[in-house]
Image 1 (tube, rainbow, N blue to C red):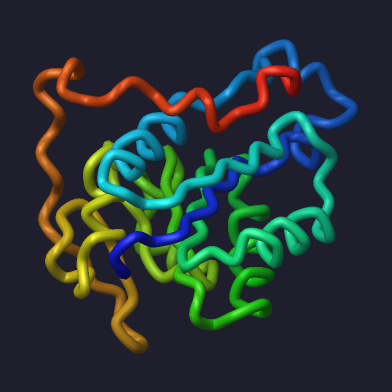
Image 2 (image 1 turned 180 degrees about the vertical axis):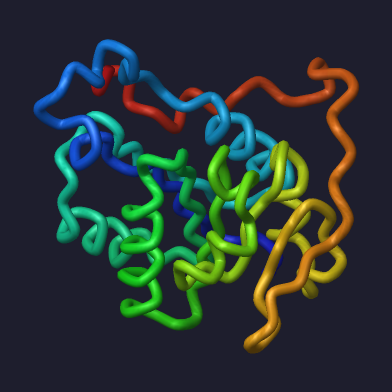
Length: 187
């Protein structure tokens, strides 16, 4: 992407999916370790990272738009499970409406299981398959996504993929998650 990228990571709201249900019992609200971990690796490499955790907030398009406008990111990363894929799609469209120059990427269980479909059904530029702890930062550091393992990406009208990233063999090699990017009073 760019050296020293400005990145906004978004965890979508659970409210449209679980609002008015007992879903909160099975989906407790807590800071997302996956985002905190990929943020920690990116911070170590000198990137500027923010996390916008909407999991406990009502789904509000204006708050997303305002956060993107105030953050002025080079890259927006969205994490989503299957119940949150409509939001991932909508957020990708919203970001591209703000600026075509902002790269929009996705990760999480759904895009790992259905990477090509996730790209086709959104305006994302790339998705990460499997563990993205290092591949996300590799994407930020790369000038060409073809050189980044573990992604599916757009090249014009084509959707291309790279070889899978190796699994992390020693979790102690990862930096401590960037919990400081979350406001503890939100939880």
